[in-house]
Image 1 (tube, one colour):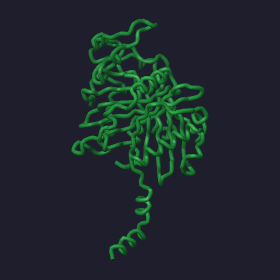
Image 2 (tube, helix red, strand yellow):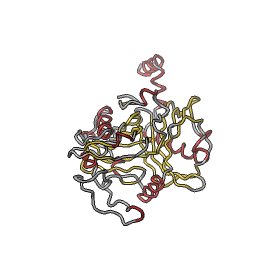
Image 3 (cartoon, one colour):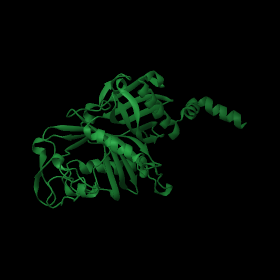
Image 4 (cartoon, helix red, strand yellow):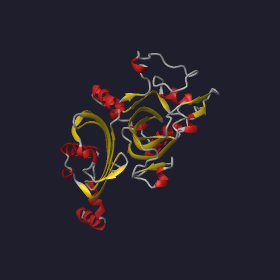
Length: 343
């Protein structure tokens, strides 16, 4: 009788059986990253289980899968940080790679998987000097920071919407930063950008080959934010105001088990008049790029108990005002939250 009832239910709702067959958990999703990287190094996209309409972008450009970095990738590096979201069917990684002839590069990769087929591929390939130096630093670390791998205690887990809300406070606090916002930083908050420490740095390289600086700048007299400052000190300084617009904020992966949120976005620095602003102590300062400048960025946040802990980003300079290739133009120019997957 029970078997008959079950068969009847499946007959009425074949999608239930299909969903069970095609469900892809954390291990399944990270396996797609393995397949992708192996195919990329072999320069053979035919090795991948892709949907007929698979979409591929690289540094914001829509390309045929197999073009772009697929022509020059020759090897995998020694650092990889995976993020999986079985609820949304998405998986991503920050990974070091080698590009012909033997150049180190850093890549952020996102895959969307539906019915065990890859339907979306998004890459940011960072090749700047900052990224090359960062590859060395990440590979010297050898593995991701423990917080990204640590499960959040079940009693402390919150909704996907809440995790995104907290992560978005980072972008909203940095955009036209005035030092007066609500900044949800934990005391142990630390940030890596392209593998380099951009908070709590032990020293800052000297100019023109001079000795490194090992003493923090004084916020009372500084005219630029200091990478030796903490996350909170940087935001409360108001000296990040030149990050004038953070747009196309696409929150694509949320890992409730580990408290992780991965966003793709663009940071715009219009230059000109926006470089001059007033900071909380009343001083007027001028800072930031002197030409219009956009960063394309993938940024990962560790959120626990409503605060931001570890932050890690892969970023590459893009033509000013460029869009991701995944959003309509009005959404790409907006700073509103774009939330993929169920809430």
